Length: 272
Length: 272
Image 1 (cartoon, one colour):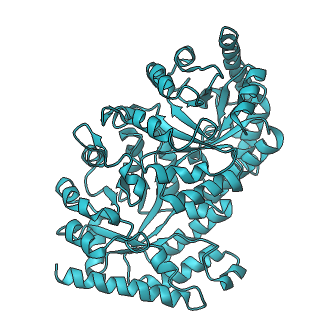
Image 2 (cartoon, chains in turn blue, yellow):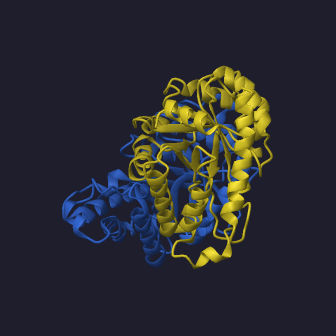
Image 3 (cartoon, rainbow over the protein chains, first blue to last red):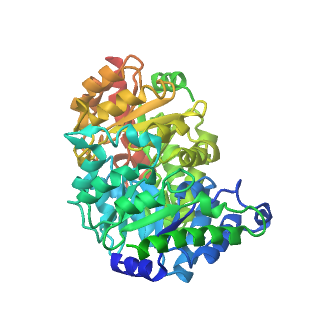
């Protein structure tokens, strides 16, 4: 997918919502546990119910790995279903990978080729040659961790690194790796006050914003400081949508939540 | 496993060698491709051939994920075989994970509980609450990335961060997370000249040293600067051992390589 296609989908849907598929067997409705693959059954229902309100899906790989090869199979089924039924949706493997060159290439093949995700989240600590193998795939994206939504973001990311914050150094260094057609950044919604400064450094790049909802970030603030002329935002909500209900009507409850966020987004885009 | 057990195994074997199981279908001997699970067949032969010369095994998860659920199954079989046949060997999942708290817990369950690895490599960028969930498991270890073996280590890790290098800040900050009974560090063999300074900060911790062999690091330098009174080193070699041969005798060739490294280590330990 290209950023042009993503932006045009956002304009059409009047939504820049990404639904996080952090699917946990302990939290899904009990009646699904009798299914052959309860995780996939849950995801399929959530996807069918929410696809009209969002433009992206983001499974976090930890939730699948926790169930071993079986969980990995649920992840493969989920991305297969997304690619077959929602080809216009942007798909993100939230895996936070990063390793020495030849090893990063193996991860890239896993997520871009084997599973055909559009994007992968990548951790920057190991530097340029750990990120570049992920940038070598046409129409695929690296979403680099810049400023994350958790409290530990203040431990290293915001510390002073050669005259700027470490996350600012990550932003500026990575602009040499690739342009906005291949690279996006993770910026936590809980750090909305940083967004204005971040936009000065990366005016054109898409930002993936986790932390709205359960983690306490505000959609209004994120849009006020983070939106650019091409929208340039994907705002993720996971638990707030997928666990909105816990009974037989869980998918309808999830749809309601997604629709409500989409409505807020449409209002913001209309005033934009 | 405890560090005491690991050190006693090192003393007994006169080896601190870790064999990296970075198993790649394109590189293993052709005759194995007819096996039902060629990756596991290869690993089993390598483990049987090298176990007398090493004290640890380290599969890099990227090589398994590259083959999807099937690869994940090969990883599960490999750790299952290690735990069944070499319970005294220290097992490391080289996965370089790290995420917000509740998500890190999912990764921890995957590697420590589902697969029963002794240790997991973890990336520090997201800070304390991304690492701590991995430290909550008894007799399990976090091996935190400090100074890695790749060229990109100079992009952020060695840069000045509040008066010290970023990797030094990672070392000193993480000492507040846990002691040497729960925490180890990755330091690349290609950065041996940094080891003396690192030992001043973390005199008691085990260091996992990749980069000897294919990446060009020197065993002598690593030992000279990095060894402590309890040895305190695990030196990893992957490609140099497992791909030493490519014919029907590949396991014997791997054993020869491992034996030769063990012999160098025994000499160093004797003069220690």
